[in-house]
Length: 236
Image (tube, rainbow, N blue to C red; front, side):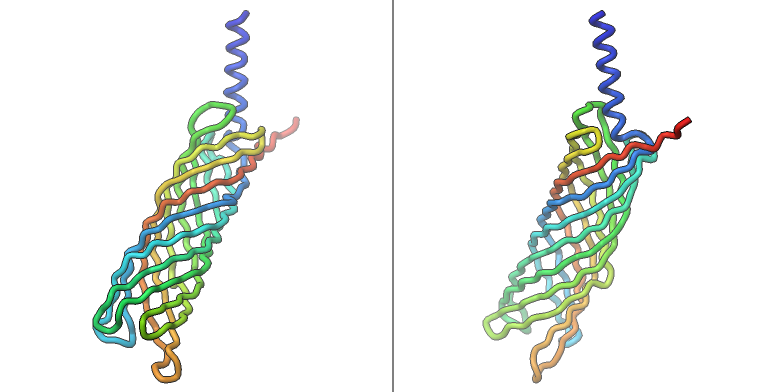
């Protein structure tokens, strides 16, 4: 009798764990707290100076929110779409070069992007499951850059001309209830963008347009909530 009871409990737990991630279910969620630390390889050329090129390392911090929706096309495997809204702040110290002395650059702005993602759950625990998620997105960026050196200071406006972001994350989702889960994840990400920066140096020097290419490696850390909607059953 004890063996039969144990078997029934195990089957019941397995079915409860599968209910959240079974084929036909839907995920609606948002990462309400997302952080990332970035290391950038920076290469820039200028339209105003001949043979001018900057190469710098930039460290930045970002925080954002990402609402998403996904559908389980197979048990434990969901595909969907997400929207990212991220605020970024960074600071760079430029070494001296032929044209300028050392300077400090502070930038801030907001990145908007949209793209697909896929998530795969593993395990059969009714309390929670591990998962791996692969995502990509394209978007645009708008922000301000403040540059200060020993001789001058400027403020520039920037806009992205193509922005790609890709990431791979590993995480765990705890099922608070049958239809609600709390998840956390971390991983690695890569982004590539081409930005056009316009700076105003006053009535004497005029405007300068700078084309900047940025490639970034990221370590995203995400916490969020997920709503699990069960598939609709046809009533006979």
